[in-house]
Amino acid sequence: MTDLTEFMITQRWPVRTPGAVQLYSLPTPNGVKVSIALEEMGLPYDAHLVDFGKNDQMTPEFLSLNPNNKIPAILDPVGPEGKPVAMFESGAILIYLAEKSGKLMPAARRLEILQWLFFQVGGIGPMFGQLGYFHAMAGKEIEDPRPKERYRAEVARLVKVLETALTGQEWIAGEYSIADIAIGPWLRGLRDFYKAGGITGLDEAPQVTAYLDRFLARPAVQRGLAIPARG
Image (cartoon, rainbow, N blue to C red; front, side):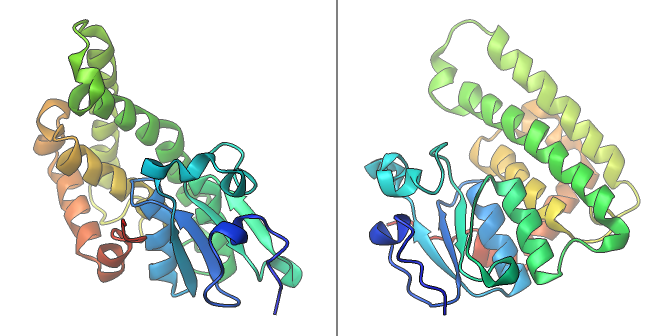
């Protein structure tokens, strides 16, 4: 079995299951992408909580794996040719896990899945997150209405793109995939955490809301949303 002690991160978060993917994360929209994927794919993994309240993400151990100090990150002891693989960036991790498991990115739909995955990474994630800051978090105290309106309008546009794309199909690329795993948590955050469905057109987007409900009804999604458990 591959020895991971050479990786500094294992000094702070010891491996519990030899041979299992080591996940370093927090249950945020980006973090749960990977826990949901691992649950859906049935890959063995250890989930380690990176506690932002304790600045875990700024420790030398975590930065040794992800110099960008963001979650999620993984360490796979059994990568290609049996060598360990260390990765950060949720979209890249989803692609890697899909290729490793042979699940949720079928070859016939690979390019379509990738385009929607990057639609989330480049559009939905940044724009939803910025709107959440100005609508529901510290940014709501800013009196100038222009920043919030800029992000609200762009999020509303993105919701319309999804509404059109989902017409006549259950999943964004025709069948359930890593693209849905990337998009679903952010829609949940927009509606249930940021409480911004009413100002972005989400509440009046029947295709998107039904899509979100289908996503959240999946048992693996329900499990993954709570992993890793907050301390």
